[in-house]
Image (cartoon, rainbow, N blue to C red; front, side, top):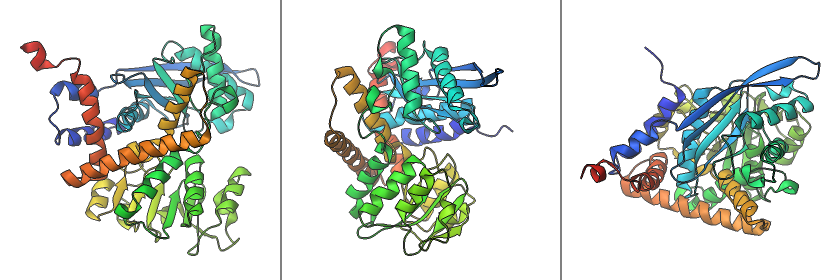
Length: 421
């Protein structure tokens, strides 16, 4: 019997949300499958003169509500199923935030840490050369993701502009500020989650000094730790790919960030200022009020979900909790703030960047923060009310919220009852 793929598991959320709404079957039929997925092989010249090829993908899942939007990741384990699933999640994430976008995603199967800077630039430009007919400011707008950054986005935007023969900064978001990027984009994913938790602290039972564990200490993990610590909360544990550190009295976040900036693991701080090394698996079960998964997919599963002590989970990663683990957490009455809401600050500020590029006008950092806070609070409150009214989990409430908007857009084109009458 064939094991269900990542997209198959993700579609369970769609089916569950549909049971709480009266949506036409046309809506489900349209959202069950990606609109288009393109696979190419990128060929680049390596520094030693040899040629090497890398598999790459771009998926445009659904564009009913606007051009597709989604990041590009460089990761050795990337595959087509992952890309399509991430594009599905982006479709719902954009609908949750009421952005005029559909969902997209891209990836290259590569370990960028094994490439020189020049090879990385060639690969980035080769990606746009291959997908220039797919992407576009009004068709499909990429952004950074795992192991990609603002400089890579700058190379890609420049390559696209050269291909079309005119400056096109709105084709890609997450660019350097000097090349049309937006202030506030760097910490947007974490800041959106921070605004969500801070506004709903009373409802979530997180008033007062909160003990926090952060799984994954990349961009989002570092920023959420800093933001929460600046509010007087205690960061008791963090992890990265090499391991984890713990301190009952609270970790020194600045020390951890300094270690990462120097290319070291958080584990390198063990033995300093009360930091104690623990295994990455132990981090899941530490005594904390708030657990923040900020790494990769499926990190919380049926094998470790029961050990979680936190009463609230903020999903800054995409799909960090499997459906089996979700069921265990629901039984334990753990509140999960789902990825399509919790980490949507990134795509929201990407939308702000796109709007600024279209307008040829730049907003201030305060304007970006105020607009992000307004949207996160508005949609977070709406989802909380759905969860209360329908007595469902936050995740199901978020999918109901998104599906209602997607259904309205799809049904506006006409459904079977309209054409059969």
